[in-house]
Length: 259
Image (tube, rainbow, N blue to C red; front, side):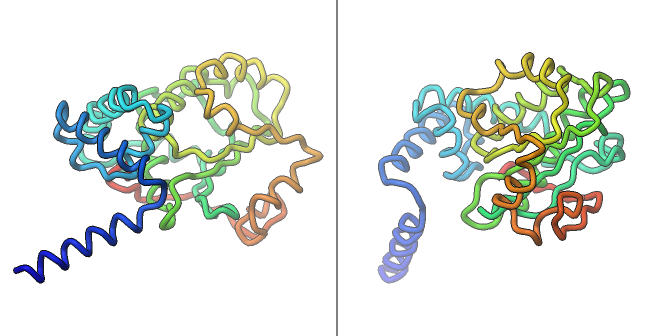
């Protein structure tokens, strides 16, 4: 029995050693867990890395991070009552072929390629669109390699016009990403941006967290090739941008939870 206890203790010590980050931050994570679990026991189901993302999203303020985490724990069972969103629940959104979940950047972050001109707000149902955002984020999280917590994206706005403008949809997606998937977004390149898009951007911009604002990078056409190739290996870069990756409409199976 004593040997078993020693083995378990050694395993636990090794597990702690394997965690990246400083000891002080992990101590704050433990405090955050204690505060949150006292109010919502379902917090036990979430791992320490999840809690650390919420802690970082609130600049290590445990009170604010706990409030944010409690909001997530209340949202999760209502947004995903069966544990995950199925393709059947977002069939209309998937049929538009506006997002491709393929490839990785040079930092090992899974990529999302989005085509804004394929989004048609006149036919979209906002509740289904919200489910679609969760579906895509969970599918992207499921593609994360070990040690990586963030994803990256390219938002291609070529051909985007007022008929594609969806302020309510943009704000809904932003709310889901910032409130329930904090510290997941690494970077978004906005490319082929038409002038008319800036009117929509000015409306959405104030709703973006300060830490998130710097993750949106507008790329001019003259800098596009260089910027993409610096960030993404040729084998992982889609053919439409001069790379070798063939984009195929994805039918991913998202993870059962925001891991």
